[in-house]
Image (cartoon, rainbow, N blue to C red; front, top):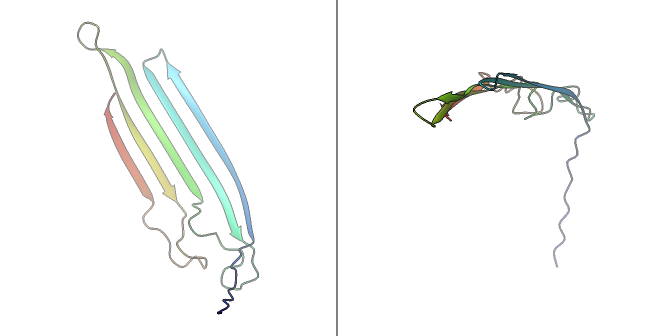
Length: 114
């Protein structure tokens, strides 16, 4: 009978953050939604290479915006709209020593008629 011993890896994090969002609507035709998140996620484990550094895969700043044109008349009873999405992330690392930064800041844009 074989016995296996393993060492559990545990990270002592401190995660603080704030998130804010807003929606603006003008006459039911123009709408804007925006959201941003700021996160300060630090490794507090007693390891010199990572102590006090940002946790990997925890971006420092994340923002999302969506402008829309809505409820526009086409022909007869048809209505149409258009929107665009923007998602941006920055201040993100792949390792616990913060040596490998995710570059450039990721931005995703998409849009389509609605």
